[in-house]
Image 1 (spheres, rainbow, N blue to C red):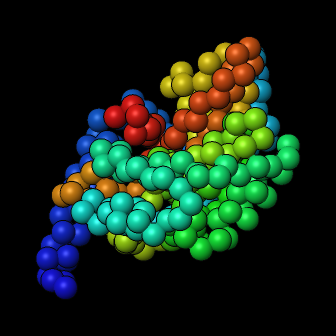
Image 2 (image 1 turned 135 degrees about the vertical axis):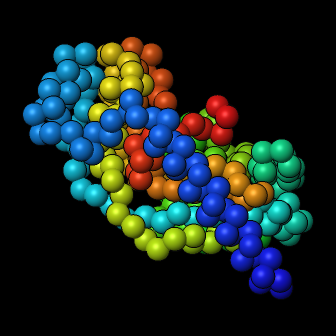
Length: 271
C-alpha cells in the first residue's frame, strides 16, 4: 500500500475542506447562526413559529460531538463486487448513484406492525444482505411504506443517501430493497463539539424560510451527511436532520443543517 500517496490525498482533502469552510463563512455573513442568538430572540422566534401554525415539541439545547469523515470514491465498489454472493434474489447495480437494487425470488411476508421483525430476521441470514451488521434500524426514517436501516460510522450513523438500506412494503409483502454503502471511512480530524443544537437547527430553517406555515416538526435527529467532494473523495459531517410534515397533505420532507456551521445542506437529488 502506498501510504505516502494516501497521506497526500488526505492533505489535499484537508486543504479543500478548509477552503470550503472559509468560503462558506465569508459568503454567508448574512446567515447568523442561532447558536449565538440571545434567549429573548429565541423566545420570540419560537413564538413566531406558533403564530405561523408550526407545531414543534420541546427541542434539545445540548451541544453534541462529531467528526469530519471521508471516503475515497474509488473504494466504493464493495456492493457491486459482493453482490454475486447474494442468494435468493436478482440484483442490479446503478454505478452512477452507487445503488444496489434487489428483487427477492420469494417475497417476505409480514403481519401489520411486525414488518421490522420480518426484515430483522431476513438480515440475520448469511448471504441475504451485504454488510448487514453495519446497519441499524431507523424508526424515524421508517414508515408504513418502507423499513429503513442506516449505516453505522464512527461517532454515529449516516442519515442521507450514501448509507441506507430500504425495504419497500407492499400489501403485506416485501419483494425488493435498495442499498447504498460507504466503504473504508476515515476520520479526518479529532472529535469536536458541534456549534449548533437541535433547537438552533429548527430556528435556522425557520428564519431561512425553509419551514412552511401550517406544518409540524416530526423529529430532529443527528446523523452524518455528505458535505463536499474533494480530490475524488467525499467528506461527511454531522448534520441535524429535521423532518417537516405538511399538516394538510401529510407529505414529509427532511431538511439537513450542518451541526458545525448551521448551513443548509442539500440532498444528493438536489445537487
